[in-house]
Each structure stands twice: as structure tokens, then as C-alpha cells.
Length: 448
Image (cartoon, rainbow, N blue to C red; front, side, top):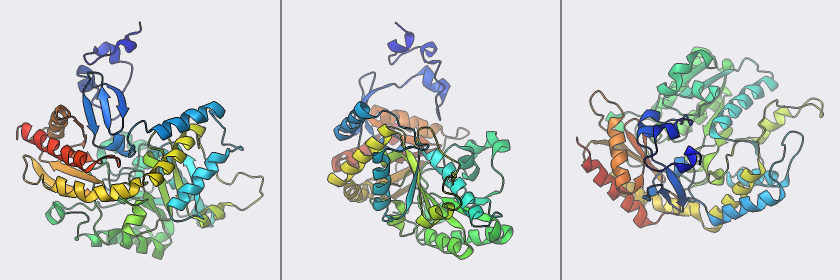
């Protein structure tokens, strides 16, 4: 039997050597592998039999839990009729239905959806749409994109260029797109530590965009891209009024505002999109992850109708936008997407996420004063616990807590010395509270 088929919790490094794992400490992992065998509902089961509560809904992407029977059945049924359909010069009806339902859920039924396969692809697609839109309008000088420090916009070259997380960028500087500038991030611990929900201080940080406009001139700037809530860098919550101010400045200068809603889209904040939660409408919205509960890779960009129409000029037989992917609107991904939206609606899961949000808020903030905890942040059904680092070993404290949390039956996400949680919408109040109590025990079990 092939060695790969014999993997077990104490599998040898040789049996694990072929897969170069993403965003993973490969040497540490392969010396002590943690292998998932199955998943059901809000829990993973490891090869060694341990059952772990999924504290981050996969990677922010499985809010309905795992193997939801209606989604499983929809994908199986789709396989019986259409396993793949080319999206170049051809289409299949469910893809049009899903696009329509997404724009309706976003409250903008006249908008258009361009399907891709991941959050990274959705960002690079949105950037291309933004630059091409201005060119189509006769403003070809608008090529500059403004990102934000600590922003995560995937791992495409456009995404890391506008992103602001140093380890994602430093090896690839020669490949990054030119003409990018960055807003400062919005996290100032002296003013914001232990904020419950949105900080009340910091709206003025949006005015840095006016400084950037003055530096480069608005006629050179195509778009500003931000996450409504910065997730991957540790749940950085925007100050009250901050996003509204960005919207005002972008409108004033004819700059497109792009919301990267790969994490916040489809209910994470207790409303369909972060735009709804914060009351700010962008011009372009990227999405992925929860759109189909991560069953099959799927993402996309929602574009204002007038942006789409700007491209619809020239001879009708000519392609208007030279961009796309072999797997755009893959039939299996679309089937999972339609089933996911059905389940969300029928089981009122976005409302349930909203109801669980204050439960998570209260429980998380009860960890204030626990060993190594230096800040707690929350918004919607998401939160983060920031830890004091081990001297000279950044990131080690979070790894230690991560391992202790597994002993408590929890799979928690860490980035640097920040623990992030975003439980599945299907969770019970008891499960959310139990998750936080398990984290409390894990924190106390790690040497200060």
C-alpha cells in the first residue's frame, strides 16, 4: 500500500514530504502532524480520534458547519447532470441564478457579478476592473491603487501589492505592481485597547486619504481597497465614522471604493455584508469563502451596474473585458452556492449569527486579565485575543496557546501572537461560551 494511504497521527516525515503546505510551519508540522479525518457540523475529527470545535469556521469560510446535508445533496445532484461547463462563450442557468441572488442579498439587484474561484482572484479581478473602468471612461491616467497597512487581500500579485502585511510582501517586492500607496492601519492600542465593538476614537485616520490624494493627485488614483473589518491581521475593527469618511473622500475625488468582503460577506457580522453593517456602500465588492460554505472553491466581484455598462461599448461581437478563469462559475461550486443561500434563508442563519454576536462579545471580554492577554477585540460574530509575545520569539506564545487549546477540544486560528475566533453560525450559546472557557484554561496552562 502507498505510504500516503497509511498516514496516522505519528506518520513519518517521509510519508508527509510531498505536500509543501501553505501558511504552515512545515518542519514543525511534519515533525508532529495534526491530521484531520472528517468533519461534521461545527466539529473536526482528527485521525487520532480527537474531536475539535471549529472556532474559526474553517478559515472564516464554513459558517454553516461542515457537510451540511442539503449542500452535499446539491453537489451530488449536480454531478449527475453537469460536472463542468466552459464559461467562455457559453453559460449554464444556475450561474445566472446565483449571480442574481447574490446581488439581491446585497440589496443592489441591478449590480453585476463576475465569478472567480477564490478571494485572491476576486481582489486581482476587482483591481483590473477598476483600472479598466477608468480607461474606458477616458481617464487612462487613473492607474494608482491605494491599499492599507495590515490589510490582507489574498496572495495574488495585485493582492499582496495593495495588502499591508510585511511577511506576505517582503520576498516578492520585485514582482509587485507599481503605483500603489497605503493608508495607515486603524489600530492604536493606547486609544482602542479592549474596545467593545467599534472603537469611538480614530475616524480622523480616514483623512490620511486626503493627504495621499494631495501627494499623487486624484487624476492618477483608480481605487481604494479596504476590508470593512480587517480579519486576517487579527480582527482590526474600524472606528465609528471611519468607513463613512473614506466613502465621502472617494466620491469627492472620483475614486472607486472597493470593499474586500471575503471574510465579512454572507453574514459574519450578522448582516448580509459588511457594507450593510457599517452603512457604507462601495463601488466594487469582493467575496468568496462563505458564499458556498467553502464546499467547492468560488469567489467573485460585485460591480455597480454603471461600471458594467461602461464596458458595454464598441461592436457587440468584441469581448469587452479580457479576463476570466477556466473554472469561473464552476457548476459544482454554483450548486453549492445556491444550496448555501437556501439554507441561510430557510434556517435564518444570518439572524442567528447576529443573535450570537453579543454572546461572543460578553464571553470574550471576560478574558480580560487572563495571563498574557493584552487586548481583546470583537465585531459581529468575530473576535481576537492579542497576547504578550515571548521575548525574542514572536508568535511562540500563540503557538503554545493553540496547542493547549487543542487539548481543550478547540481548533483556534492564530496569526503572529493573535488568536482569532469566528464560530459557525449553527453554534449554540453553550458552544460559544464553552469555547471561551476552553480558551481561558488554555491561556492559564501556558507559562507567562
